[in-house]
Length: 84
Image: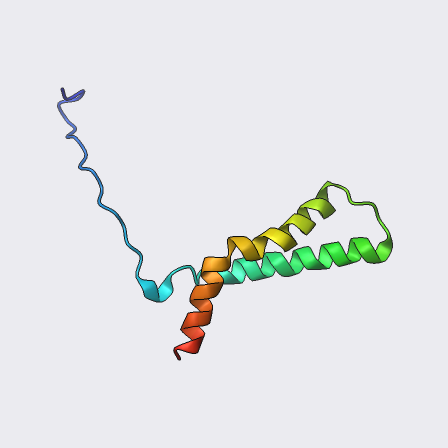
């Protein structure tokens, strides 16, 4: 059944495969910048003796979790650097 005579049914998209040469490398600068800003915020909280509010807690979580989330991108960047 076609709901509109002016439209055709869409074909099912195939699986998109990203080339291995640039896999995840475009996100690496973003992860690095966010990680460095989070480290600066956590160090500032500890140096000033502030209590850990929501912002500092999220920064601490980013310091801990961003390397884990970016592990595939970091591995791809390391292998790209080593093969050059």
